Each structure stands twice: as structure tokens, then as C-alpha cells.
Amino acid sequence: MRALRVSQALMRNFSSTARNRLENRVAEKQKLFQEDNDLPVHLKGGGTDNVLYRLTMALCLGGECRARLGLSFKRPARTGVRKGLVPSLGFGRELTSV
Image 1: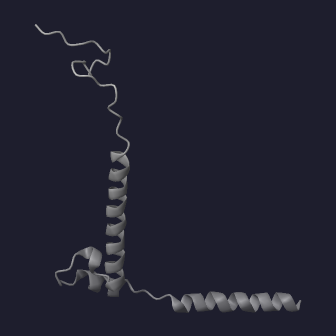
Image 2: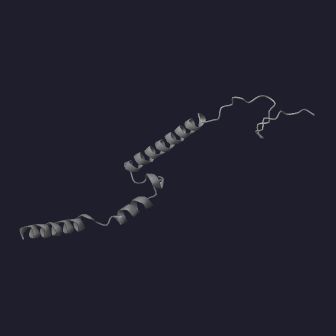
Image 3: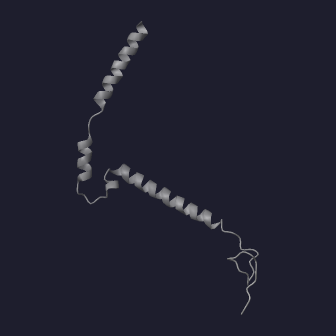
């Protein structure tokens, strides 16, 4: 019986504090983002947005460099290609001069 009372009290406590903590801050955010301060929208949130933007750009550039580097080593080897062969046909026939 005592456990039931404790659990009910805890539920009442948590549900009432959750409602009190959450407040509507949409109007504040709208004012912040609608100000004319010559900043792009993705940087108007402050320092955190600036750090997230720079981190995202660094990760994108790093990923692109890594992909290009990986692709540069994946080129097919050019061994066995002799002058005069037709590489587009792939049959190994020699070109005949007219």
C-alpha cells in the first residue's frame, strides 16, 4: 500500500514539474531569426550554430578528399596496353593503316 502512495506521489511530482519547465519560446526565436543583421540564417543561432556549421563543412570536405584519394588509387592498371591496339573495342586487334 505504501509503495502505491509513493508511486502516485512521484507521478504527480514528475507530471507537474514537466509542465512548469516547458515554456513557449517560439516568439523569442522568431524575433531572433527575423532580425536584419546581415547574417545567413544558418548562423543566426549564435556560437553553437557557427561551430556546428564549421564542423559540418570540415567533415564534408574531409570526406570528399578521402573519396577522391581513394578513387585515385582504384584506377585500372595500364599494363599490357600496346601501341596500335584498339582499346575501345577490347578485342586486341591491331589498327591497319590505309
